[in-house]
Image 1 (cartoon, protein in one colour):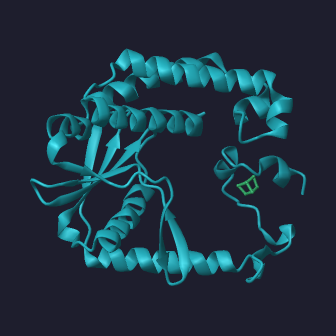
Image 2 (cartoon, helix red, strand yellow; image 1 turned 180 degrees about the vertical axis):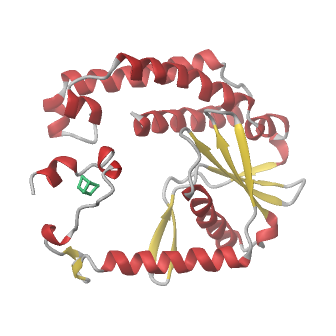
Image 3 (cartoon, helix red, strand yellow; image 1 turned 45 degrees about the vertical axis):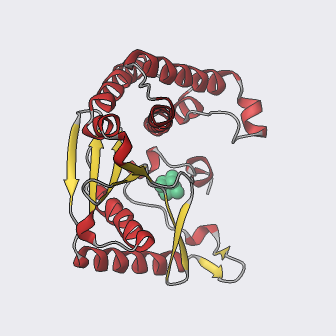
Length: 253
Ligand code: SF4
């Protein structure tokens, strides 16, 4: 549910921004809620009534993990997410980012729209899935915005450092010209981050370490063949398992 909710909210925020840039018209909060609710309902119907379709075409149908494993959604959870829809779309429309888009439309250059931006870091292709970035001509600044539909996490800064690195490399700009924000849509809080060269060195170091860690699980580096499933140790931190896509497979080991 949290992942599905995040995907739906991100989709309609992206659509709202694109529509605004093309037509000059912003959606109302009720319109956004209705769209979001429609998608949540569609996901519920797929998950409860279209199991066979989903098995045949899993990328065309929704399957909510809560329903797959427990058969239903608790009424408290449904109520909670209904309330969240209103909160996040309200906060989006009132957010400083959206206010800037609507008040400064002419002086903003919106970043390229392709879904899969990537860069090479030491021969490894790294995909960067940024929510939104733009260039503010008046201030000569590149702005990166990440919408968050969940709570704050220690990883948020690291994720944004990678985005800053991408923008720095792609547009050949200095870190001083890059401003990075998290917009926490549940609370309406906006958090600003600044990065230094040391942050960039740290992110590259973390990246190299995690690539090495992942390569331990390659039996053949040319065919990208993995080692045996038994060699993937199970986590001791069981909270990871709640949202894991491999839960069923893992339990049958
Ligand atoms: S369920 Fe997922 S997170 Fe948990 S041990 Fe298995 S693979 Fe790891």
